[in-house]
Length: 378
Image 1 (cartoon, rainbow, N blue to C red):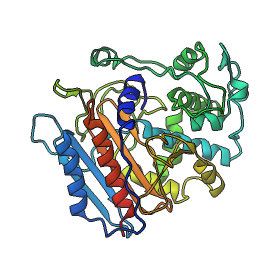
Image 2 (image 1 turned 120 degrees about the vertical axis):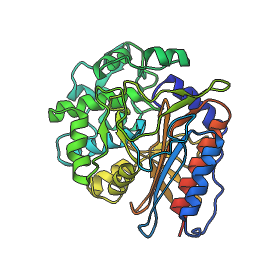
Image 3 (image 1 turned 135 degrees about the vertical axis):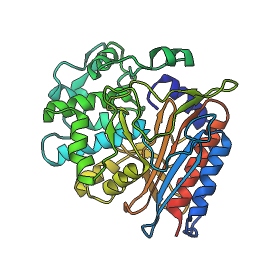
Image 4 (image 1 turned 30 degrees about the vertical axis):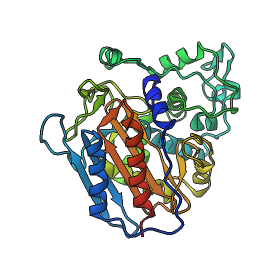
């Protein structure tokens, strides 16, 4: 969900996606066999590799893989291999911002102009009307200038192109805003690049260093890394592919991808631990966690009741209540997550294939079903 091309694929998914039918009661226990069945269904759909991890209601840790680590081989998918988690990064960034708010170093109602004078001005853009909260919630109205590609040829030609946060923000400000600040929810990667600039202005350190110091090290997330200047994913990992039939899967594992809109590399274990800590109250005080959960309708035409808060979204569970999540879509990698409201249960699924045909909807539905069954289980 981080550029025009992925947005086009996502549109194809969400226009046809189905919701999970409502059921009132908690379901039977979710077992290792259930998880194996669910990841196998994803593999059978055409996903090259799948890895999933579920922490159950009783604290059990279930892990399953399916498919292969490299297309055309029998190399197994590493059970906790590294992957590009793409926009799931945004929840890490939002957590840092909420911590800064709790420390009194920033207010969610501070404006961009107050923190970054002159950065968002011109062509109808007015940083004095855009707050930190709006950036976190994708309601700034700014044009999203994050790089997008219209074809596989474009991706292959430009995937190693480098850019800075300031360059993308400057491009966005050259365009007229898409709506008035606060008036409309619209997913916006450029807003999170602005947030990285805010973090650095307030703390004196880059966003990824704050993520490391405030989240990764305290929680022991030793395998959550900033992609940085490297174009590669550390070993062990499964390769990531874009599948646009009738062509064969195209390996897009290696690329430049190091910004605050989606520049973290992690594992299913680390992402699950992070989400459980966040919803369990380990990372931000109760007041700030409550602010994070204040959502606006998002993707409601696809997932009725879905809402986007501050760097995290909620979706109804078939057994009642909601779960909290943030997905991530990168060329070659698709991450889907879910954590219970009490922070005790989690499910993280990493798929190493982005499918560009009618199966994309089915892929989304299968991943969502896995998460719903795991979190609703006894």
